[in-house]
Amino acid sequence: MKIETDDLSGPGIAEFLDEHVQQMRSLSPPESKHALDLDALREPGITFWVVRDGDVLVGCGALKKLDAGHAELKSMRTKAARKRSGVASLLLEHIITEAERMGFTRLSLETGSAEFFLPARKLYEKFGFVPCEPFADYRPDPNSTFMTRKL
Image (tube, rainbow, N blue to C red; front, side, top):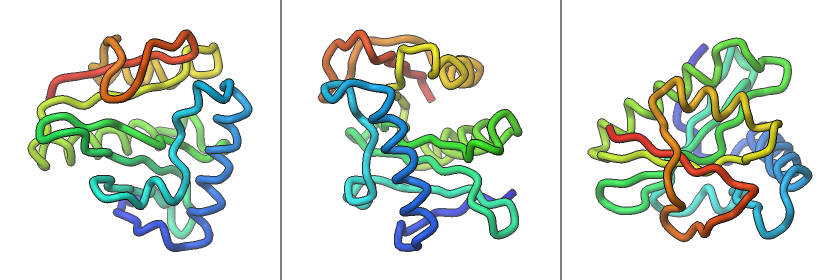
């Protein structure tokens, strides 16, 4: 598998991300939707990576700069057929390393609190993320779990 930065211009990534946004919308009420669409991921201060196995897109993730020392993990997704195959762990390790290299000292994330998101929360715990209060522009939300880790 290969991880590379992506400029979000290819049709494959647009479809992959649209599936992600649609799935998140189906699982969360409108006031609890935090998934970024393609245009939002193109904003300055966001670095986006894809994971490919040969020519097949199997995962993606992004890092959003919040301030000089704090970044947010966004848009982590693994292709359904590749869940539990190591794609997410490989990508998360890469993003943490890149966040450190970029000089961030804290990495935070928001994920769902429903049972569907339990594997994601377990993955983040495995990589040292702990529950935290809402950060940045987030507000307390029973549908969200906020996590952070020092780098």
